[in-house]
Image (cartoon, rainbow, N blue to C red; front, side, top):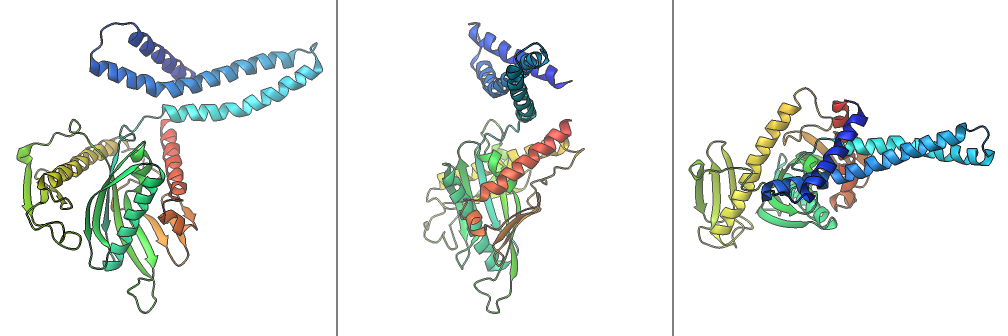
Amino acid sequence: MDIDTKLDRVMTRHEELAATMASGQPLDQKNFARMSKEYAELAPVVEKIAALRKAQGEMRDLATLMADAAGDPEMRALAETEFVALKARLPELEHEIKLLLLPKDEADARNAILEVRAGAGGDEAGLFAAELFRMYQRYADLHGWKFETLSVSESDVGGYKDASATINGKSVFARLKFESGVHRVQRVPVTEGSGRIHTSTATVAVLPEAEEVDVKIEDKDLRIDVYRSSGPGGQSVNTTDSAVRITHIPTGIVVAIQDEKSQHKNKAKALKVLRARLYEAERAQREAERAATRKSQIGTGDRSERIRTYNFPQGRVTDHRVNVTLHKLDRVLSGEALDEVIDVLITEDQAARLAALE
């Protein structure tokens, strides 16, 4: 199907939806909500198509003026200038429309659950995990998102064995989904007396937040254990059995939350994380099936895949998937320059998906 036919279908569908919703015919709430959502999603595409068609029409009119040998030479010259400018604009408009027509990742508009875990490297890995967690917290603040810590398990030296949070806001998952994977740090640990550079790692997982309607969890599939909070950060929570560990028996997924004094609140948080992990597992399986014939240029988002190196001696951050290096380590860790990496990842993903459609 050529691009013009696709654009005609989009315009026709947009008009059909508008007519149906304005007709006054009875629609149940679910269908009306679905149609309203589709209409809103098509609106920016229709706007771009209208701009493209307008530019094409103006070019035809200008071409007629340019071809009129008996016309005013000054008008012909002006028409030629405008024609050249419009012709240069057309590929940009067409590219913007193609991007808007790319199949949507329905999870992109969702809030996210962030999980950061210390990897190889002992105490230094824990300190790095804590820095990454704070980096995402600052990044969320800069975007006006709500960052709420779910659980933190501290190490003896002030690092994090693991930590999780919910991040709520506009397009949270769309911007953070490529952060999943192994992050590597190269630096001289504060505990290292000889001044040797060590390499440590931390694992990041960004999961789309799931609603109860997305994932059906049967009570019979859960084993719920309660116990006393323990370890740094847990010692002062309370001395009752308020910590909750939930095991999803069919998959073996385990979630433990101990930060709240209320067992009920810890259970609710643990179920939220479990639901997100199950939803992401289903989503990843569907994506793997769709992508079986191609390998994404930016990697799989697998937690075992090394995606980025933070090199302190050289003050640089390198993302290995898109071969981007920024000599702005401090600004990346403060969240300020993280968009410079994320924007490239999103652009590369769009390019890969466009190439797959052509």
